[in-house]
Amino acid sequence: MIPSDVAFDRFLREKHARREKRYSHISSRIAVEDLPPEHLYHWIAKWANHQLADIGVNSTAGVVLPPLHFELIEVNNDSAGAHTFEADEWGFIVMTKPMLDEMLRLSRLLVDQNPVFMTQQIAPAASAQEISELLLLMQFCFVMSHEYSHLVRQHLNDRPPYADALGVSLRQAQELDADGYGIYHNLAFFFNGRGRALASQLLKISSPKHLENSILSCFLLAAMLQFCARWAGKMRVEADLRAEHPPHPVRIEYTILFIEMWCREIGAMSTTWMTDGAIKDYFSAAARLFPPKLKATWDKQVSLLKSPRSEQYLTEIRRSVHRLRTGEDGTPPP
Image (cartoon, rainbow, N blue to C red; front, side, top):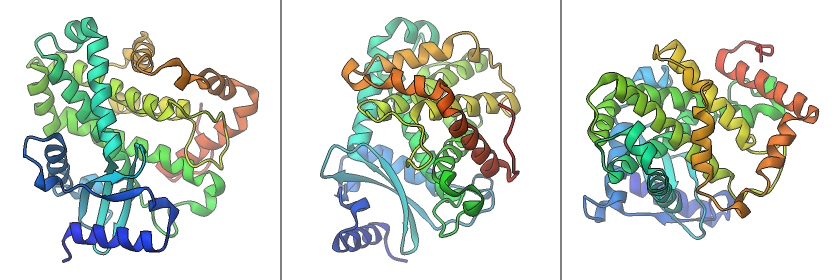
């Protein structure tokens, strides 16, 4: 079998030779194996590949996948993003260095700007560094699981599931479907898998109930950080099925819905956070990290999605996501 680094370099050279625009910003893989073991890039790449090597049939829902490998990549711009693709015998999940650096910066900034909340509600005995490390890891897992879900849900196939039935709405429905599958995967890891012990260690919490509440709060905060980061500076206001991704408020709304569904149907956890103002507080804490000039269109985007002009768009999105997740035709109840 071709080594993963050789397969990746060969794939990238081929794409550059063909001048394929989608890959033009990728300069190279970062040789994290040459960095000290304690370096963040080395540690997180090693951790990610350990997780990817231990995926079982329950996680893939029976879908046969190639061996998966994570790569941290250099880019020739400041693009903060993640991608997934298959090359030779491998499936690659890649993240740009600016995105990982951004995750670290936002995690530290969120903890530093909300010290009372972090010490009184999240983890009284943990240090700011330890809480920020968990927020970083949760952001990383949120993005990684989204990209992984594109493979598991067969979104990259030449003829992906329900392509004909969904038509122009397919791409955005796939993005929301990947969010949902990835969220279920992450919550299972942090509440019932090995992520629980890691969270307990970082947060310095042994009480099961307190730990679960803090894990949920951190996960919601990590999700808000990611969506606000992707939203900041994006000036286009739209509700257009032809766009590559759904508007960020739609992704936030569905993320909250997916987390609530997991808590209610699988985690057997209280969902009072849906109505007690916690979500608004978490979003506000993340949004405050970005200067006003980067949020110039946020209110306009929210207003558009609440207007009658967006009713047909939102109805089509609900129908399409329902079809991808359940296989059933028709629009689910609002």
